[in-house]
Length: 432
Ligand code: URA
Image 1: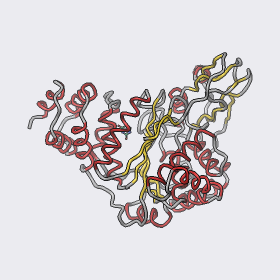
Image 2 (image 1 turned 60 degrees about the horizontal axis):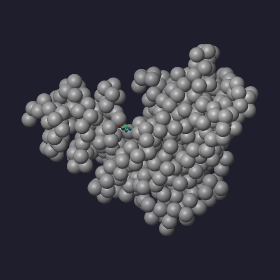
Image 3 (image 1 turned 90 degrees about the vertical axis):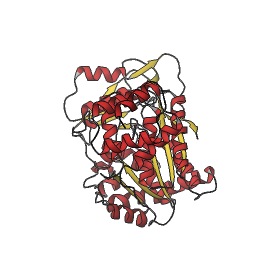
Image 4 (image 1 turned 45 degrees about the vertical axis):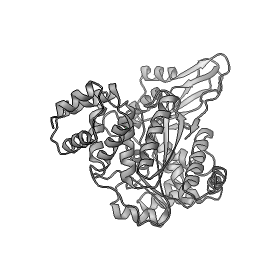
């Protein structure tokens, strides 16, 4: 087989065969195909697309490109969740412990932040000593014993995605439904859980810009999971503004802990309870969503969800004192309020720009090798639909270094104000 024929075939709009797709992935992982040729194929896929059969073949080829995790030694129902990424998304930190407190086994592999999007591992590592790198046996034992472990993806899991995603990141080939669906689902399948909940985001701060695109992506991922005998459900959620109020690693851990104590922001609490209700129902642990939601709320009220979070932090060598007293989490030396210059109603607190601004003061990384400041970030004072009087705090900036004037101006511009009242945003657009 000649790779150039495969590239040309796709370029002329013809579907690739299963054999061609498996050949391409196998040889790329072995280092036998150059990045420039693979980039050309990826761009052709972005522009032409892939049908369901091709997407399924690509997912399977990637899934089988490395090791898989066998969770069969864990008793109970193994669940996993995935968010397509966004600003202020600390869902795993609250949802995971609630599910574990309600009897599910949460075996979760998470990633790091890049660009405006945060990553769960970075958030957890803002807890002193937290170890994201357990070996497979320890990971499985911890999930079996306490019901939850959150770790970094092991090196040998889906190596095809590691190579391809790094290449897509620098060749403008991320935004493609078949490529995103196969990338996410190959990892979810390899991670072994039977029940998978997807949070597919749309809007300014997400890969998918519209709810329709997010829904198409979700349907494709559900089909891929179901082909492989997994139960997959999805929430289509808004990412035009950050989730919750906090953006930044330690700030988000604090917000997740607050939520587990029953005093989280309304939108974030709603997402967590709905996600928990759906997963508990899918897992057969509760008869319907309503009961699932009640049990999830109960786990917050009776403190069992917070206890699960503490048990996980302790098992993974983190400092539990910082969870018992979140004032002990890393703190920035300066907290600067940004006040409104005029009155109005918030039309949008722009997710993408707020995520970028937080990254620029150290809360995220522009390139993979950048280091992050766990204490840095932005806490919103107002969100879409809120009334703002001149002088009210729009946001608090947690920072180490002096803020540049131009950065502050961009932060003002990230809050779009209207003279007329604005409806609050509907966070959960659809459940699939
Ligand atoms: N997240 C992934 O893991 N892969 C993608 O392609 C996009 C988002």
